[in-house]
Image (cartoon, rainbow, N blue to C red):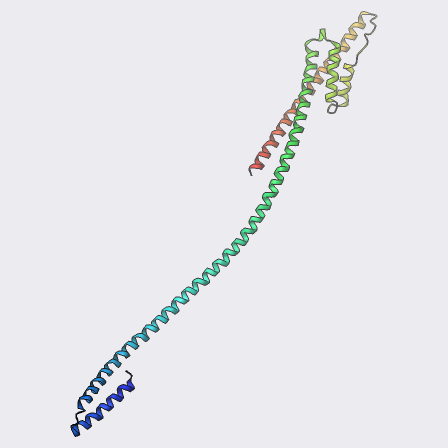
Length: 249
């Protein structure tokens, strides 16, 4: 019941009481009832005021709590938005790095294939050079054996054949004077006319001098080509190791 209604009932009850007292009209019971209703309405009105006050307080508190929660959630959303933007930027950077690494891997793969191909060519060249050096060293040592172990029974044809082989093998790495000495020894000589005993001694001494010179030359060439073989083997080993390290990088 509203305050206006309550006031109206109270007014009516007051008027009725006044009238009943003066005339003793039997409507006094109704007036009494109305007076009771007025008190009840007043009590209910006070209770409604209390309830309204509580409701109003609850609304204010709820609005304040909602505003605080909304602000907190908005701050969280802003933080999350900032993090998302940062993550998106990181993703973009990582995508770029992945692309660069992919290109680098492709380049390395192509370089690796090229290196393998180059290594294969290098291995083939090494094999050929090693075989040539082994043949040269073997031929030189064969000629040395013929000249140093069987001087008195030297097979001139075998010696000439061996020296010709040596000359052919070393021709691109020996000096002109070295080649000339080898060629002079392996050229067939006609036996000179020995008119006196001194002529024979002179012939033997000349042959021995050239023979000794060739022996020294062959020893020198053997060392030269053995050193070259060692260097060639070392270079091949280094090339293999370099390729291995590059493939593991």
